[in-house]
Length: 431
Image 1: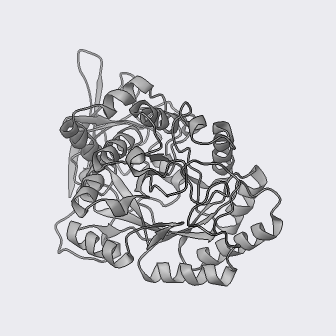
Image 2: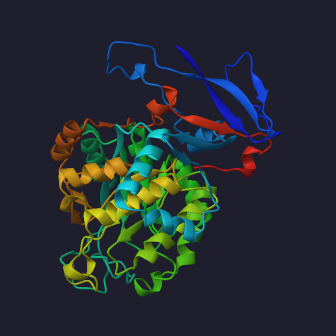
């Protein structure tokens, strides 16, 4: 079925890419605006099916996906306007973050439906391949050698052990396998790095997407990880630049941004987010989102973590670090609005939230989770619990190495899309 929807283009700038369109109906009004009819495909009536072939997907490669939308300026649906921007001001983000809760939820949920299929959620598994003994002084971390916590340092896991864990994760339904090592940076750890490259190749060979978080990377190390088949690299900013020195002193904010740049330049998807509950103010939460939303390319995924306070760390006092569901929802919703094409990951601390609270987070725009019984060293819901939650909420997992589903609202013609001409893809990078 074909439906025609009128979209408004900036005066004198007619979009050059109207795919599969044989003719255009151009109408000028007195104000000089140009209106162009284009078709929006609608799903033909069919019998419900779970067959993967019945779903339309975008490319999995984020750069290939971006190239499709390079001439897109904004989207509108149900009175809500959204666009991928890199020029957000802190004031604009603060205004969104501070909206009345009902208004924030409506706007975020509508943006989410304009760009994503809200029923599809990516499932990731995180394994600590080298635990404890880290020389950093991150105030929240149970793995720092500076604090006395329950964590006992262990050597790097064997390649075979890691691949066996990845196999179990795949069998349980996970499609992205993430490996974390507790150290400041790879540095000159040549032997350990060679083992990690072997792990990446092995996990990739299973048909899983592969992610690593190994501390700081230089450009050459990032390139080698890309060549080994790494899908994504996690390197969180944790909090705002202003609050950061109160949490960590052994690594600068710029160090983190440099690693993110090295990863991005190597062609690896960037996974970068933060942690709530570090003693920050709401202005710091806005500040973190401002940094992420004004990067040259938005991260492919943004994890939003609620601190799991660990006794023995400077931030181990539950009362000081407590984060409630409304804190998480506000952060997720604001991230969804300012970075509409970014996957927002509901990460650490999920075990403390009820099914109903997690539902609010999915409605606010979260479309990725970590599953498995542990996140590095802290507890996380079991695989079976997550499957039961998915069944209860009508969610399904995103397959590995396949792009996201086209938003049903878009394919059904509910979204008005405005496109512009004359902006080369290289000058308008989306994420």
